[in-house]
Image 1 (cartoon, rainbow over the protein chains, first blue to last red):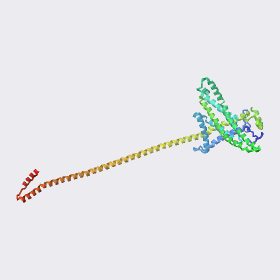
Image 2: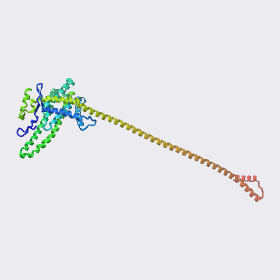
Image 3: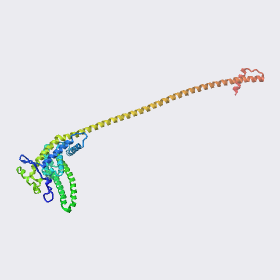
Length: 256
Length: 182
């Protein structure tokens, strides 16, 4: 992170998204290098599992502060799942909980200055979105057979516009993984770029003589944006999880 | 795709933003996807096999415990209410008992007093009757004596006035005649 300020005084806001290959590796002919992104994924996994196990070590009936934090995250996601899919949706609770904790932790890790934001890469968010999409497809056809296709034929629509509506439904279904992944990716990317740009303004203004007097303005902006970014980090994890639940619910109950 | 990657990507790092935008760089696809798969599967397995059952167990246990405690509280409450109602019933019984005893005692006392008063009244009435008969007897005796006294008096007066010794029979006759005239 320190090696910046190269091009024309303005720190490069894109630099933070660069993938650095820490340990070059290859797998079946594909580049499988252990990168800074991989490092943060591993850190996230270790943090989540480590924290939850540490918090639950007492298994107390009256929870300690850390234990109640772990339980709150469990109850939060369980409540979301139950509300969105009903009791039979609890089969997918581990998957949903994993998704939420993984994205949330990666987003939050990205807020540490100098850290890498894994979710600011569309490859990662698309990978997760495709995982959900494929799960929905498999689950939908396995559970309902061809009845799953009723998802595209809403009931109560007049027959003469039904083809049109069906087309729209199919397109919207197919575009789900795109919007699902781009939403998270774009939010994290844009937020981090904006933060970096505002922070860059401070340095530029300080280096510009009399204009240094208004340097505190972008500083305030950066502080406010940081708070906002924490909110976004949580919110996008929540939104991603919520949409996953909605899509899975469609697979369980395709009739509109 | 594989071969030029290891050598190719190291170089343009220093070129900075002149290179392709890193989140859209196709060279970055496979390492991210592969490591995403690794870490996500690892996290999923660890969470679903180890962590979540542990948390769920504790929460379930607490729920059960709370349910059991609530049930126990409910049961104790029912018992309390039963005890309270039986106490109230006992109290009401005692009260009813007490008042019946009081009434009985009062009735008994009243009866005794009545009996005694009646006895006294009877006694008095008998005495009164005795007194009345003795008065009547005395009166009758006195009335009977009046005739004798009158006869004696008449004998004495007649003797003194006319030296005639009127016999008692004469006088009685005369008195009877006089009395009869009256």
